[in-house]
Structure formats: C-alpha cells, structure tokens
Image 1 (cartoon, rainbow, N blue to C red):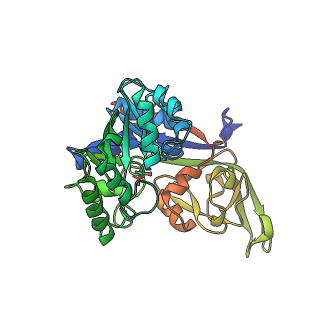
Image 2 (cartoon, rainbow, N blue to C red; image 1 turned 90 degrees about the vertical axis):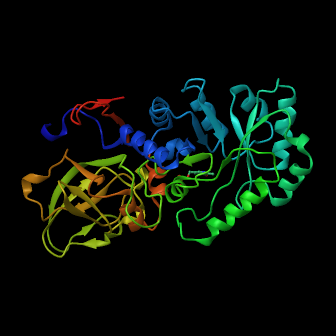
Image 3 (cartoon, rainbow, N blue to C red; image 1 turned 180 degrees about the vertical axis):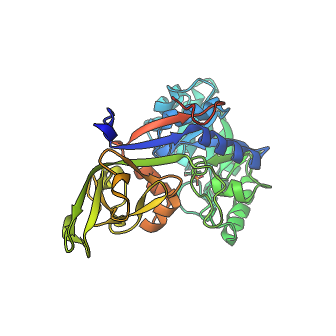
Length: 380
Ligand SMILES: *Cc1c(COP(=O)(O)O)cnc(C)c1O
C-alpha cells in the first residue's frame, strides 16, 4: 500500500514523443532542403515502432526505413497510404510479390536483387520503386563497383521501376574528422555518376549533423531522433527521449561483512542499507554493470553493488535518510541524471545497443505534451 499505489508496474519506460518530433525537426532544419526519413528498424531502436512512427507521421515525415520486410509490413498497416517504407536489408528471393503487393520499397543490394525486382515490375504495371545501395567502402551491403559498371552498361536493367534514390552508408560518420568519410563520398559520387541522374542518400544522423552543407537529397535519421549521441564527441544536440525508472522491491539493513547478490562479489564493510530494484539484465540492463554505475533518487547517486540479476539489482542506499526511500518507490536509471551515453560508456558499448536491448517487460508509456503545459501530459 502507500508507496505502491495500485499499479502493477515494475519499471516504467517513458518515451517522449514530443522530443522525438523536436529531434526530427532539428535534423530537418540542419539538413534542408534535403528530405528526412525516419529509421524505425528494430522496433524504432526498441522504443516502439508504431507509436514512434505515428508521431513522426503526424509531424510530416513520410519516409520510413526498416531493416526487414516483416517490420515494414507491420508498420505499413499502421500508417496511412502516403507513408513509404524502405527495407534496408534488401529483397530476399521469394518475397518480391509480397513486397510489391504491400507497396514496400526495397533497397536493392545486388544485381540479382535488381534483376528479380525488374522481373516483378515488368508484370506490375510500372508502379514499383526501389533504392539502389552502393557499397562505397564499408563492405557491408550494396552493389560493388563492378555491379555499378554492369548497370551503367545495361540501362535496361533499371527499366520498369522507379529508382527513387541511390544510397550508401558511411563507416565513420560518427567521426567527422576521419578522411574515410571523404573517400567514401568521393567513391559514391563517382559510381553514382555512372548511372542516370538519381537523387542521393548517404547521411545518417551523424552525417546530417556534421555535414549540414552537404546532406544529399534524403537523410536517414535514426539515433538522433531517439535522443542518442550521434557524434562520438562533444555535446549532444538532441533532446532526451527516454526516461527509465525502476521500482524498489525491498530495502534491508545488513550488518558489516555481509555478501550481496550472486557470487557475493560485494561484501559490506560497515552496516549498510541495500535496496533491491526491479530491473535486471532480462530488461536490458547490461550484466557488465554489476558493481558499476548507479541509479538516482532526486539527483542523489545510489551506486549499484553486487551482480546484476535477471530481474533485479541491488543499490547501496546507506547514505540516504531512512524516510527517503522505501519499497514501492521509483528510482531513475535513465533520465536527467544519467544519459544513455553514460550507461553505454560504463558498459563498454554504444547507446544504440542500450536502447535496442530495453526489454519487452518494461512498461512503455508514450508522453505527448502537445501544446499544453508540461504537467498537462496526455498519454497516447
Ligand atoms: C541504421 C541505419 C541508419 C540510421 O543511422 P543512425 O546512426 O541511427 O542515424 C541509416 N542508414 C542505414 C543504412 C542504417 O543501417
């Protein structure tokens, strides 16, 4: 009772859709006149692709990138017909008709994919589209230099469907000083110039923010929309989107020389108070953060002690006044006091991985403040 209220919520993940929209507008304004597409692969980086895409659509975004056809098909039904969905991982054999029927636009990554799309398009009445991806040096996906020469020598291969964009992806976009960005872009330009004039797309969030003079024709914004740090160093220009808070399950007093958690990797030196909170590695909190990192209560740091369990972890709250924290309270794991980047750095990874690991058990709440005052929040 009391601090528990009547909610059966172990941890609350609040996604601020207004912040997503504001971040979208920020990328739009630095990239103008380029169009900005939203990358909503992997369930919008773990935050909920339907809610996020819906907010971005309402804000005027009409182009959405997923990685897989299944992701695009699920969103296709959730958004109005004038939204376009692109599938980054390419056109798999046997999926052509399904993609064509749903109006999905595949990113064609090989000559075989080009040929198969052309075959379907020939019997489709000329309304299919595609993006051509060129590998300009990352060696991940896309047409090789030789493939582009084949296309250039046989324009008929691109007949029967519209190539909306020719795209590439940069390996070091988050490191704007790297010469590899210029080398890749020069290769991309040279190879694109062999093809008929087609609008170009190469910028992810980082490239859009660091090359505002040259964003190409279509920016593909992902992490920046979600408030992550797109560029490896410097201040983060994006607004925070995610707040994660976890419930305190129990608070206990333990004497000196007491083991805490699996392996008893933490042993108290003096009498201590230990709070157990309801987020663990099954919720995406990295197990590597055992004995590292912290949660926060009203700006006060509460260090993690002991290993991270599957469903919980333990904090040393000895320094708090007794009345400050009790079972049922929430403590902050991501928010004002602790950013995605803080957690990623402590865990030796990147914000993308922290976000996409946020588990399905977390209670996702979508905040839309709209035009009203901040305390008048409406939940979508
Ligand atoms: C994921 C992805 C993006 C988005 O990148 P961010 O760094 O999240 O902005 C853009 N383009 C391609 C090809 C991608 O795979």
